[in-house]
Length: 99
Image (cartoon, rainbow, N blue to C red; front, side):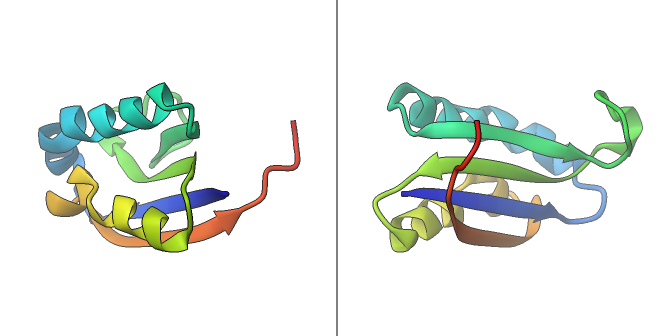
């Protein structure tokens, strides 16, 4: 089943994101390579493709996991969690309808 993992950043998360970004992306690459990743990306803090100094406010990952427990465990082990980037992480079942 698919799950949406929504991370909400702490204030001024830019330096924390930068420090953990490579490890964070490596885990997403592993999901992609396993055919389990639907989409992933950050929420810009401003209405711009590149938010510059404004940075990001959070992230969304939609991926397949065995169950909610497995999705939560994967989310809890995210390098962004360990680095203190996220102030909160929500994991919810997700049903893809379109496209």
